[in-house]
Amino acid sequence: GQQLNQSPQSMFIQEGEDVSMNCTSSSIFNTWLWYKQDPGEGPVLLIALYKAGELTSNGRLTAQFGITRKDSFLNISASIPSDVGIYFCAGQRGNNFGNEKLTFGTGTRLTIIP
Amino acid sequence: EAEVAQSPRYKITEKSQAVAFWCDPISGHATLYWYRQILGQGPELLVQFQDESVVDDSQLPKDRFSAERLKGVDSTLKIQPAELGDSAMYLCASSSIPRDSAPEAFFGQGTRLTVV
Image 1 (tube, chains in turn red, cyan):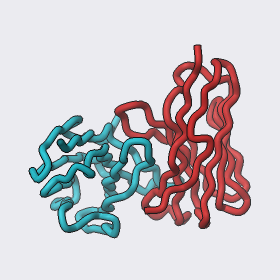
Image 2 (cartoon, chains in turn blue, red; image 1 turned 45 degrees about the horizontal axis):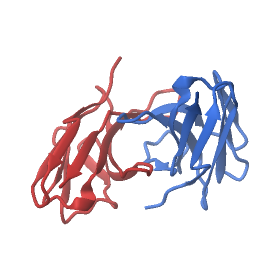
Image 3 (cartoon, one colour; image 1 turned 90 degrees about the vertical axis):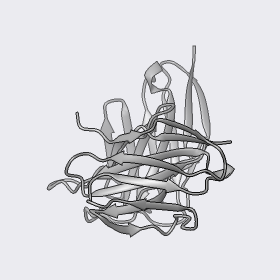
């Protein structure tokens, strides 16, 4: 099945650094979501975006919904050890509060170097 | 805090055997999803239920996989016979439609299947 393209695949940073990752699609999505997954656990929702051009923050996390509706990015400021994990973007085609499947990205693995 | 329950957490089975996974969604959530996540990839939808009805099973390998949600609450995903390529994390998620926001899908901890 289709998977969204995420970059970078992995990141190695030092604590306190800012992080930026993005997600692109060949087709339009009307809702973009960012999830974090810890080893052996299910994904947990971080941020949801519902309108093209929307910029949304959740603490140290900021995400934007691209104008073309084919991309999104996630920034993490001042990284801390608990930010380690795999970050997934996900898209939904609908935006009318219908329950639709999520199409996930390929993931970005974040590692913090001591 | 309400959560999606899945069991077992881990399962090792021999190829050609049958295996089953169970999911109990958050109470009141009408929509239930089964996703498969191969190591190093993002989850991919296998089947979606709305109450007891299948909404989307286009990616479910129906020759060996089956899913049911008989009373519209908990759900079972079965594989028979299991193949080596079925080794993956099987994630269950559920969602509702809140009045003033888009639905959020909550995921369980998953069942890690290893076929040997």
